[in-house]
Image (cartoon, rainbow, N blue to C red):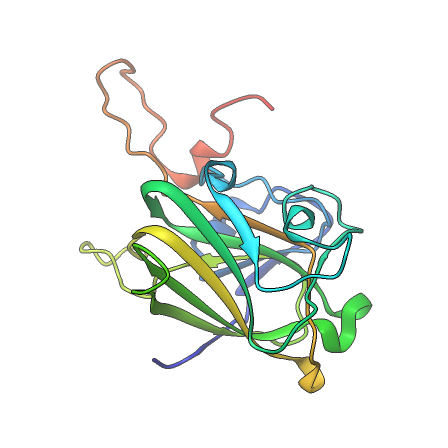
Length: 210
């Protein structure tokens, strides 16, 4: 499988709200340390999270605590990995990952492999991403397979998702990941209850008041 280079088409600086036109970019980068507000639902809490290794106080809980100053710090041989296991098969559309090369330097991942399956014994690579000194929340599709209509990429249906850190910048050994979120696909409106449903990604961002 060939690797995709994560070069964001557009960057939203100093805000957690990407511009509507940014939502169609293959890689959405927000420089704010807070998680971006996106139309895709966050399904992270539905899963059990584990990591290949960690230093005491820098475990898997740091990936979801919402604190940009904490991070998962691996403490074992490469490759390092994060395992996200759901109790049922779910549709997974995107990942949002917070990396900070200016602070973490050689601890920053440079190549990620995304694997999915029904369990640890049948995982398959669905996406490989190459990163160039990332700084912020990077959001990208888990799959590289186009939708049937040619607009966007298909979700991946899996019980288990694994993010493999294949390499770090400057050949660093251990790794730092400051945040990670798993996002599901945007639910298609049925139109039964609402005569004027919110259908686009842009409108879905502002459908509810936060």
